[in-house]
Picture 1: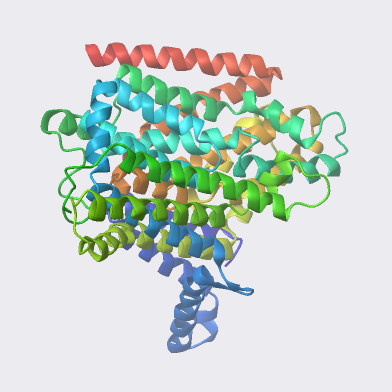
Picture 2: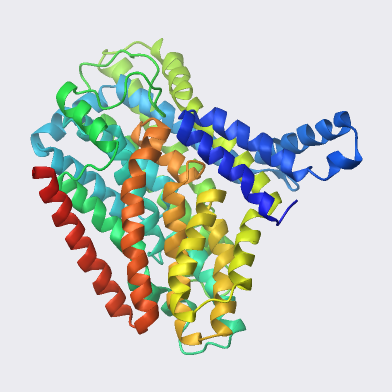
Amino acid sequence: MSGTIYSIIPPIIALLMVVLTRRVLLSLGVGIVSAAVVLHGKVLKSEGVGAWLQDVIFTIWKSVKAIFVSEDGLNSWNVSIILFLFILGIITAFISISGGSRAFGDWAQTKVKTRTGAQLLAAVLGIIIFIDDYFNALAVGQVSKPITDRNKVSRAKLAYIIDSTSAPICVISPISSWGAYIIAILAPILATHGVMEYSPLSAFIQIIPMNLYVLTAVLMVIAVAVFNLNLGSMKEHEKRAMTTGEVTDPTKPVLGELKQELPQSEKGSVGDLVWPIIALVVGTVGSLFWTGYRASEGQITIFTIFENTDVTGSLLYGGILGIIVTLILFFVQVYAKRALTIELLPKGVIEGVKSMLPAVYILIFAWVIVDLISQLETGKYLAGLVEKSDLNIAFLPVILFIVAGFMAFATGTSWGTFGMMLPIAGDIVAASDINLLLPALAAVLAGSVFGDHCSPISDTTILSSTGAGSHHIDHVMTQLPYAITSAVLAGIGYVVLGLTGSTMLGLVTTLLLFVVFVITVKNWGKA
């Protein structure tokens, strides 16, 4: 039943379960089983129930195994991410033990004295750390949590800020893992359709002002921070944080949070937090350049480096450097300052690993269902609907935006959506009006990020929850109103762009609607 309408059933079941039960592991588990069942739907008619059940179980097992082992041996991509999460948990635990989190919070309180300032700081960090979305989500969370916690900003709000400034900035930055990947996809599309007036890089640059959802989503974060725009269930989280000081719902588990209180050094300093983070950043960014340089051939440029870099391997190398610096500072606390005992070493490691287990469980379940959905060819089915439909060319950008959004939402991967939808968009435009090539490609990129923002099975959404220390489904549900609003405004802009052929008119329309929305919601909140 792959590549048919039945292929959309498992993701829909999983997503409905998430919304109705708020239990992400249960929902993903049901989605995994339903995907395996649909994959073997026809076999049941020809085999006995026992043999069919065996096939279903074996299919799930193969997807689980593929997370850790590929045809070439160890699946370094997934394993590196899991190890990095564990390392980050350990770093977090020892930063807390060494008193770095407390000292940084005390220092930040003297510099950032308002809730608006705390949110803007997190947003600015999210914008300037644009090398990779995974690194962005986790690093920004580590730096921002002590500041937002002290200023009574909910973790759900922090997770939203992180998520809505990581992928959107990465997707419009040519010097990022996302930018390099997209430019590599654009090259054969332009060559196939004989487009010679711009290179893949210049095409990518020209697409930036056409990526209406990304621009709106980033502006939305700034407006939310400055004007305190709390939509939907975000109101409850922010009200609880401001009135009680509880930045998370105490009845729900959160990702990346230490399970028990650890002793804290009274002699800790800001450096006990800052130096491990600096080591993490320097180690990761340096590794990104080094691995990309080593893998590049011929003329080496910064773009070829990011096209060939080993993202997850670099995260792991950066994490190793970060943990080395963290442990050195811990030993200083033990042997030089006599503020801690060496017996805390194994306890810190264990608690750090335990704090990341919920995030790792969710990530593994998400990877399994994404693999099964890939086998079901859900994305291929949705893309085929677009290719076969008789579209009014003027509405092509907005239709591609919607389809890419739904595909990324259902499959949990923006990268997979890029890879499938960008060539299809190129084929459709080449057969109708090649002048709409760049707007069509921009709409695919924008829709992919939108769908990724809304999807509870997206790894970037999971890691944003982890980085912020938020309950995962709380993050998903609180981000939805902002993402959908940004998508509606962008969608109208794409309609204008398609009808007029003017990027400027589409952009101005979106921005004007955004201003009207902010003023309306701001005044409505005061009423």
